[in-house]
Length: 293
Image (cartoon, rainbow, N blue to C red; front, side, top):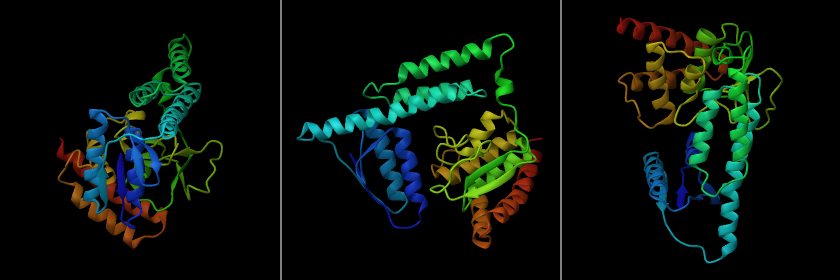
């Protein structure tokens, strides 16, 4: 069990905690108490998360024990199964989409299977849907993965209001390298209902968002096969600022964080933040490109 207490501000700490818990497959026992089945991996996952919480000014306590009533055990098992079953259903549904990305869905299924501790229903359906997708992609005259990753044109791209590093950088990436005619829409996620044809990024259940330990910028680069070394470097910088895990530790990261903090402090309008951030990222991309020649 992981018992948490976060400071009231900044708000992103709760978002960060929720994302981490989803990635490791934990479920809530109470509002601030989360559980995983006992294993070495579960202990390691919670220990790392507890360190992150403490580093962000919160408190975290780890415990291991047994519930005296079987009802609580049954409820938690059902919660684990429901979470994985929903994931399997989403994978199966996504596999039937005309422009489904087979590689991405395979990775997603592999991650879900690693978190399926109690044999959740839906796994056979997800696996069958992926098999059917693979057959469609390999069929004569069928779509191939190059086509599936073709860049859209003139689409409306939707993300959450109050953009910061990952959303600013992703918006720049979209308009500069993916969809030059992109239109952006910034919405309050709780009241938002997607419109037909919209593409969501860095949003819960969005078409392009965090995958595994990748931030949205990295997800977009992988999906659209953007292998430019300078873009990879920017993705590493954005990852460390957004995910706060110091995975890459590039020397440019603290400076970019300060510039983005300045932009968001000076600009309350999301379009202005994206415009200012994009100009800065244009210059950074040019400099990183020169440095690698």
